Length: 174
Ligand SMILES: CC(C)(COP(=O)(O)OP(=O)(O)OC[C@H]1O[C@@H](n2cnc3c(N)ncnc32)[C@H](O)[C@@H]1OP(=O)(O)O)[C@@H](O)C(=O)NCCC(=O)NCCS
Image 1: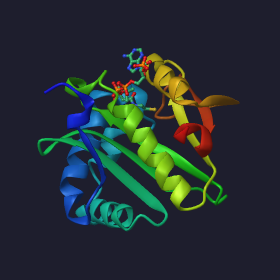
Image 2: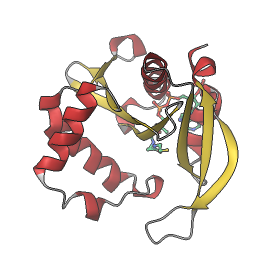
Image 3: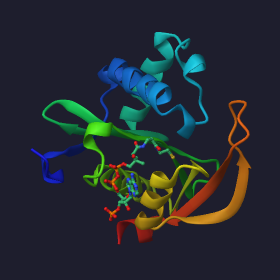
């Protein structure tokens, strides 16, 4: 089935921490250029790290993790956490399986984050995107994100840069 309607977007459950670890490690291995976090660092994290991450996200108070699921298969994920400034949440770990790309899955994951942000009273979503990541920049621009003008080293020992993008929750849900 190829229509996006067959894909369900839902919060992760605490008992799914191993699936979260698997997909997180996969994105960091297969799409390493697009993430600041390094596979070699994450693969060393103990089970407790992933358990805590999934449990906190499932609680959904200061952290969230949404999965795009089709027939039991995870097609994509996105995370978010509350920033020190309670008006802001940060979108992280956006990834769609290559088999599921181009079907609007990422757009729906952004919407899930915006809905979560609205539910906790936040008004702005911010994120980092690698300057060279044209597909992701296009995705975020189409969804309503705009550059804040901040540009910082990409990290991970690379010479690349990442940009800060921001959008109002209102615009993302319009
Ligand atoms: C970027 C990524 C999340 C997009 O996921 P996706 O589900 O294919 O995106 P969608 O189908 O929801 O596309 C939404 C919009 O993004 C744009 N877009 C997505 N992929 C694109 C591509 N490869 N080239 C150009 N534009 C693209 C399109 O403009 C599309 O809008 P439109 O259909 O209205 O034109 C996915 O390619 C991915 O996981 N990439 C590797 C990891 C990554 O870069 N994560 C982001 C880190 S900041």
